[in-house]
Length: 391
Image 1 (cartoon, rainbow, N blue to C red):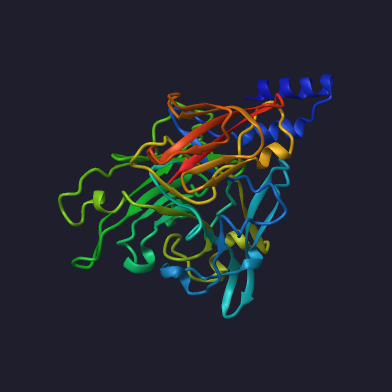
Image 2: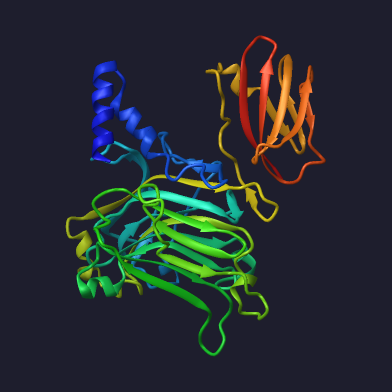
């Protein structure tokens, strides 16, 4: 890794390229479009403000979120800015030791509920975690989209990353102990079905960015650490979700859409601390969680679902701005503005679904739901391609 970075530095010095921009492009790749997965949705947090129109809603509450957390979640604790060491543009969640509406601390929590939700796929985020020390509880997780009418835990919950558990505090492994978990079903005899697995990692996880990946399909939920660096790494969490014979079986709860959540809790049941004086992580006043990006990939298979504003167009041949607005999608009707010489549509496995000349309209009513790629050659000699998702 260091050798490759040095080569980029030397190359940028000799040829005048921007090292920072090259590195930013590299670190935002993640595991990429591998094993048949294609990018469906992402937020790179590269702008000046959080995209609350298409992607996120910021939660505002001080009710403890059912976990006896002691912070008040505020909009002011969510921002977009640069991580100071790498310069990466990030989502920033800031936890502060301050009194606000009866709470001794504030922090941030945001969700894609109602804006982006999906069933099955590969979801990953590159995160720099705060020093949890004693009392912080950062998380990257999902809740089932039915929570509004079914409640919890019937809606289902998938915790891709949690840190700050009391076990790590007790064993002085706060920077290495983390876990994945799933919760589902309903209360029966004072309990409900759940499965959590903690891992004490071989290296610290709170001094740099790390990639957290979830792979979720018809049979299993798996979670991986730094899969971009260690592609053959074993999952740190794995649960079979195919069983559905009994009402409490996970197969009845994990084959429907979920939405994404990031938050940085202060205290609560997970770290086992409910007194602000015990939150040593905020002894200097505040701590920050940085999210470089979050990405969703799918294979375009019939069992997958996606609702949201998908990835921006992918173009070739350095198209002009006018070319970037040529494609309009209304239901199953795709209209290409301008004079089209040839229009070809492919499925994600490379099969040609449509091939037309001198036509700028595609009626895609006969195609299955999923992801496709359209390639357009214009009569002015330019060409571009775009990934689209048909509902």
